[in-house]
Structures are given as structure tokens and as C-alpha cells.
Length: 78
Image (cartoon, helix red, strand yellow):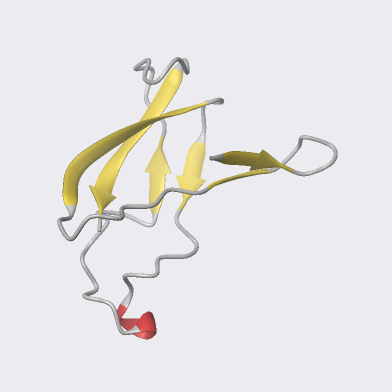
């Protein structure tokens, strides 16, 4: 789910894994090229989660089309 601010200059992408299994190398389409920051991870030890590694907290988009979007990011989804 992608949400933009009123000026469409900032966005937030919310991703949920409602299964008991982490997903390695999970790819999602993103609307714009750039660096995407993981700023909230409910699987973090801070929230009593398993602290499963997402890989990096900053993920650079790739010029790989996915889910109808021109760019995509790939990361581990706890």
C-alpha cells in the first residue's frame, strides 16, 4: 500500500507479512527510483519480535519492473 502526502512529495509504503514464515528476497514494485528506508519494523527486538534481518535499513531501487511498477526493491520480509 502506497500513501503520499498532500503535495505528493513524500510517500510511505506499508508491507505486511501475515504468515508465520519470513520471505527471503521479497520483491515489490515501487513508483519511483531512489533509496527506500525501513523506518518501522514490528518484528524488531524492540517490539519483542524475532529481530529477523531485513538485510539493510536502506534499499536502493532497481530498474526491474514488478507489480506494474517501473522500479522495484528486494529485501528480506520478516
